[in-house]
Length: 198
Image 1 (cartoon, helix red, strand yellow):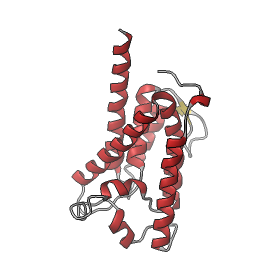
Image 2 (cartoon, rainbow, N blue to C red; image 1 turned 60 degrees about the horizontal axis):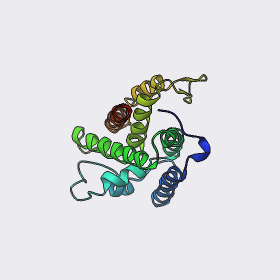
Image 3 (cartoon, one colour; image 1 turned 180 degrees about the horizontal axis):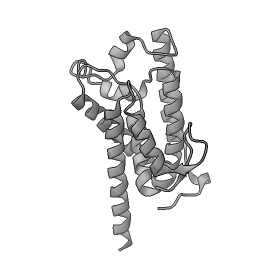
Image 4 (cartoon, rainbow, N blue to C red; image 1 turned 180 degrees about the vertical axis):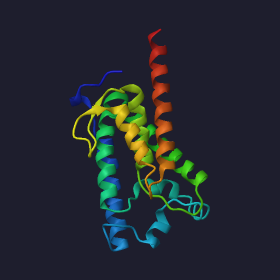
């Protein structure tokens, strides 16, 4: 697959997603009384947990737009912008949204299946889905991650980020579920593209 001309890419879907995430972050920060952490009361209303999912099913979606502190949303929105820009250039708007939301939902579902009573918020599962898609389609795309001062292949960057998911207080299950979804989507699109050539 080849990138489209940058001038032909409509980044509106990406800016809409980023804007919604930022607006939700501002609202939850005001409700929590802090931009550096979410209060338990707010987390209990929009965060994802096995203890609340049956009475608050909307949290499987709302958790994808909520972030626990300014560092959390800053890192996720920067990642969303760079991954999202490339995904839009490669596969277009509808597939971008499909991979993003299905990846986020699968990641959240995997979190629910493998935890008990813990809370999770964040767009990371959906963002990892975009990263997984790109790993399959353009594995040697050069990228930079914050703590490595030189460009590295995307597939290496994703492995590093996936390993960092196992640090304490990170919902690695959502990351892994999103990543696997993105990889599967990438292989499906590759297979679909090859079929069209015959």
